[in-house]
Image 1 (cartoon, helix red, strand yellow):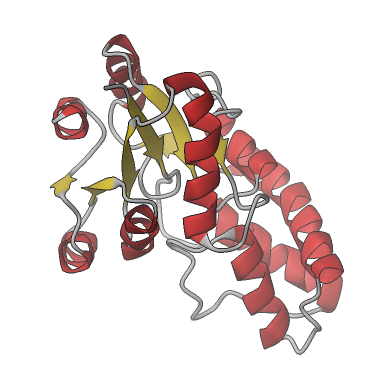
Image 2 (cartoon, helix red, strand yellow):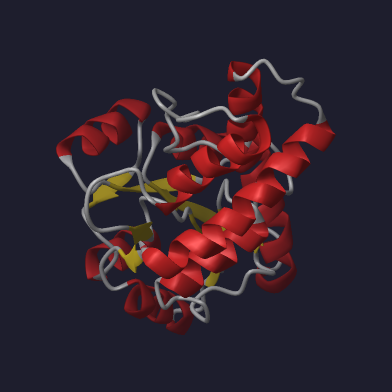
Length: 226
């Protein structure tokens, strides 16, 4: 049976050096300041595991702005302008040997895709900044522009990857938060958690991840193909 492997991006494949806020959070803050003069909009907001459209809705509500589709689209378009600019100043980097792990999975016949809360353009910008622009084929994935709930994003990714894997393929989601675990369970997928610290490991354990690794590499590949 072929295997579909869906990677979350932020905190799973991508991280940044130094203290927060990172490029994504900073770009959301700048977009809210530009459009609505609402400063530090993401203070106290959990970004990890969120989706771009869901985060946009939360920030608009905090600012007292109607969270209709037009306002969400406008905020995310402004965010992407700031993200592209921010990534010139501060780039993402891979978490472990992402390129090697994906290459090994492909050699074993897996269909590798992404399931991320980032809108597709944002995902591309972040991956390119980390030198991973050619590692993932973005037509094999689900994004924050496809849906707001993460489970629907994962479901969309499975549907797109099934065109390459065939019907009945086993699905494995690789992610770093309880949101990834719940979304994977909604589509009957196995979950390999990636925990870069003790807090995230505890979260994944509590959520019921099937396995947990520390970084992208050989151990991750072994758990995915188990």
